[in-house]
Structure formats: structure tokens, C-alpha cells
Length: 320
Ligand code: GLV
Ligand code: GLV
Image (cartoon, rainbow, N blue to C red; front, side, top):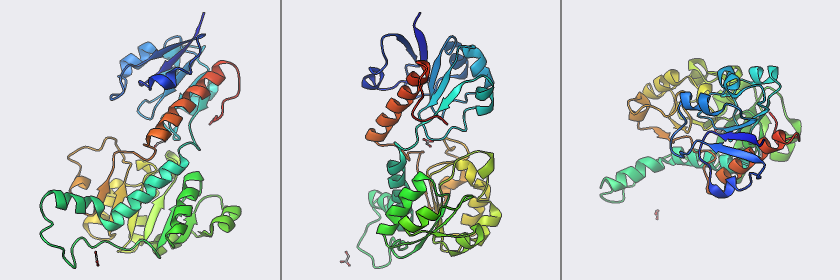
């Protein structure tokens, strides 16, 4: 009998063409909505492999619903905190993700968000559309310079390194903090290691580029925000859980910091009633870090390939 692969979201047809004839492909046939929990539990039954997204929580219940033949859980994302790795390990299930293919694309978005926040691009564009561009004004839509400023990167993984290369092009001074110091990167990219407190105090742009999960939860809390400069901005396209959102809101409301650019939130999608949406100094994006046609297509391909390799008994490209 053919091995079953279940995909939790509709993927492009040409990506799915890579699935060989000896694999039976079952897919949730919607692109714009996440699979309801009950349907997920029902439809994974008998699967040898599951390809999933950030929108699904893959826990013991899902693994049990799939059955003991489940060999691989492959997510179309670099983050994997939505997958219970302990439960997977106990059952000998391989967990895969899609790093590398999204690194440069995500770094582009981080920098775009930084520039947009510094120069208030969305606010200026909204004003134009609303007819508030009465005349060129010498002191309207005043942002803050990016070139020559100090960027503080939290973490020094692939995406942080790619952001550092972009920051170099803008003539920025680059500080970083991470749990493991990376001397090779310090030399090749011209970045300076700093303890967390010094980084927060010295940076004009504080940019967390850390994975989610317990180890990084609320790293940017009220205490950390209080160390930042009053004219500094927080740029977060990593995980919402890294920032204490209530503390951030308060820091913005009291002008303890000058602004924030956010692509990720504690709860996604963020509620339209959330007070962050009423803050004028904030740029908000709907988790689009890796969202280019090229990269999302590569991620979908890679997630499928990883699953198919494990299902065939081979080593995947990107085992967690
Ligand atoms: C996006 O946030 C990802 O983890 O790929
Ligand atoms: C701006 O467009 C200028 O000419 O200063």
C-alpha cells in the first residue's frame, strides 16, 4: 500500500507535482484558512508524514491520532515551537523545518521594517492617501536617520548575520549579543559583541533575531525596555513571545522609546481592538518575514522534500 503524506494547507500544484506516485498525497484544500483542529485530528490518521505550518499545533494528540507509523513532521517554517519535539522524540518521529532558504528574504524584510519605522513610511503614505499632503513642508513626516546609527542585534544566527551585512551597507555600527559568542563572525562582518545591558543602552535600533520558546520568552520586558534610549526603536520580526507586549505598549505610551516595527505578535493575528493599533509610532505587519513568491515556493518544496526523504528512509536536508 502507498505511504500517506498529509499536508495541512493547500500548496501550489507545481510544488505538489514533486510527490512521487508511490506516495498518496492528502491535503487540506484551503489556502487562506488553517485546518480546524477536529479535521486535522481526523485526517492525519494513517499518515507516514505530515507537512505543516506555524498555524497548527502538532502535539501528542495529533501524533496519536496519526498512529504509530508516523515517521516525520515537516514544517514549512524555520520556527518549530508549534511542534512538541519531546513527544516526537519519544516516538522516534523526525522533525524537519526550512532554515537557510528564507534567510536572505527575511533579512530584507527586517531591514525594510527598520527603514519603514525609522522614516515613518506607512504613516506618510496613509497621510498622502488621506489628502494631508497639502504642501511640501519643511518639518512634516520627520523620521530619524538610519545611516551612521547603531544597530543592536539579539542573536547571531543566519538571519542576524544577513541583517548585519545589510547594516554594514548603511554604514551602521553593529553590536550583537547572543548566548554563544561568534568570534569568526565578529571578524568577517565587523560586528562587536556586547553584554545585553550595554547593547540596550547603546543601540538606536534594537533587533531581536531569536527563536521563540521558553528560553527567549519576554527577553524584552519592562526592565529591558527601560534601558533603551528614548529615541531608540524596537524592530521585531522574529517571534512575538520574545517581547512583553504590555510592557512595550507602556514604553510607547510613556515615550520611553521612540517607536516599534513589529511583524510578529504574542497572538496572531493581532486583534483589531489591540491598543498597539492605536499607537502612531508603530509599524505593524502581518508576519510576512519570508513572504516572497520565490522564498515561500522554496520553503514549500523543501518541506515536502524533507518529509519525502524521511518517508523513504533517507536523511532529510533540515532535521531539527
Ligand atoms: C516564520 O516565522 C518562520 O518560522 O518561518
Ligand atoms: C527635497 O526634495 C529637496 O530637494 O530638498
